[in-house]
Amino acid sequence: MTKDNHEELPRGPTILVVEDEEPIQDLLVDAFEDGGFAVEIVATGARAVKMLRERASEYRALVTDINLPDRVSGWDVARVAREVNEDIPVIYMTGDSAHEWASRGVPNSILIMKPFAIAQVITAVAQLITANEAS
Image (tube, rainbow, N blue to C red):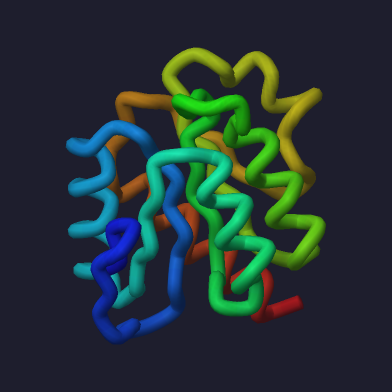
């Protein structure tokens, strides 16, 4: 797991998670690691954009909250992710921005409403990674 500066060796495909709420961060990290994924987690859109631009090829999927504490939204992060890797699976998480998904979301993405069952996020990531590998 990487929680900004703490690194361990990756166990499987690395998922970049952008989420500012620590309890949700912890749930996602535990669930992804239990599912055999490596996780890098950041709390701001600006940090996620920097990581994507520097190391896009390392990430197999992006899971992002839409409303983040800086000026860079999850919509923005996903657009950058697709600029640097047009095939990266994108999963949005939101409690209140679902109505904007059709106009602001990237194509072939999934939106999951908060509160969600953690298995929904893991299943969505696994499905999108599998679909990408099959195409």
